[in-house]
Image (cartoon, rainbow, N blue to C red):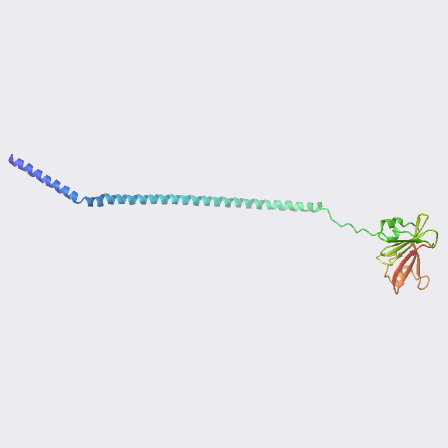
Length: 246
């Protein structure tokens, strides 16, 4: 019995020492356990979590970048396809439009009115408007740009009227309200006789048109417009004088 109790006590003491030593060791190494165990594990866990978060963010960014690039590529392909279709349509329509334009061009040219300038109005011939022996009142009324003079006539009871224009002068006789043109004296301008003689024509041209004068140096000819007398200055015509035979 004593032996048994001694054994039990010895066992208990041994267990107590072991427990005490364990606690001491535990207490002595608690910091080490915390650093090498919990802290390291915590740091490792935090690092792993950070790495995982970074990886997740990188993947998300990569996904967004990939998606954006894919959308840009798709948009570029769509634009290129649209431009290609437009070019094909233009190329297809061009020949048709060219043929239509070529067909319409002659029609348009035919439809365009021809713009031609009207012929220059031919100036009336002076001796068609004025007739010797007839009234010149209508002509004077239509061409009032002249100097008018009136004087008692030396050939009758009436009056002599003189109408002086820039290139010719009209002499008429008025009696009892009736006027009769007696003389047309041309001294300038572009007037020509019916045979083409004008102021400045030569004696050779006059004789070629009307023949040799009836008297030397006296160029007087009977024409359809009345008696024509031509006056010269040297070899050039100076005056063309038409007058009645009365």
